Image (cartoon, rainbow, N blue to C red):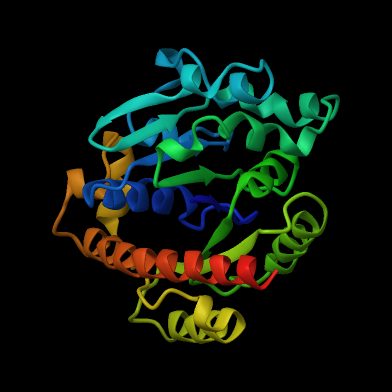
Amino acid sequence: MIISLANQKGGVGKTTSCINLAAALAAKNEKVLIVDLDPQGNTSSGLGFFRDKIKNTSYDLLINGLPAEECICDSGRKNLWICPCNIDLAGAEVELVEKEAREQILKQSLSPVADRYDEIFIDCPPSLGLLTVNALTASDAVLIPVQAEYYALEGLSQLLETISFVKKNTNPRLEIFGALLTMVDSRTQLAKQVSEEVRKFFKDKTFRQEIPRNIRLSEAPSHAKTIFEYERWSKGARAYANVVKEFLKRKKNFKQDKSSHQIDE
């Protein structure tokens, strides 16, 4: 199953969620690939893949036509692989414009290897350009991290419009897998209000488990560690472990729903 983590608003815990959901799933013997499609490269560096040590990247996959096998690296963790990126990817938006079937390139590139993994997570950039459209076109579903702050839902309408555009034009099977509340400070009334708003907006698509604001989650990437490697008993680690339990149940239901739709058709 291919899932894009997307929100054009930066700083919402998208990369943190990508790394730690992948790590938690890998620990449950799921084979997981992360594709870093954010030119900032924080997912790559957060797993220890720094710009000067990366040979082939998601840029080479999209622009230079390298096979996925040559761009995927073993993360050094059981069941977890990554297609890293570096700053070269920042120019890809412009270069993709000239490509034929430009929205389909990532889908075509991942197709030969997709069956090797139980999950492929694509960490999208905080924008709604061609990189994000490529990710959504390649995906079965979208997971939307939403920060528990005052303007949480501002701008989400644009993301939902982009999802609708992709669904209509390049990927009719695309669905919203869920919304995940992040950086929640449960002591504040604001966080409670935002949580209520998000749950009202996304209804049962919202994960029951919320990700708390947690200093250990903030520190882990600077040590190139997942939260489970850095502080496995922290609130953040326990929260992501609970999200993964929900994730696997949702995935099972998602696949069943897809199968029933195909039969109906």
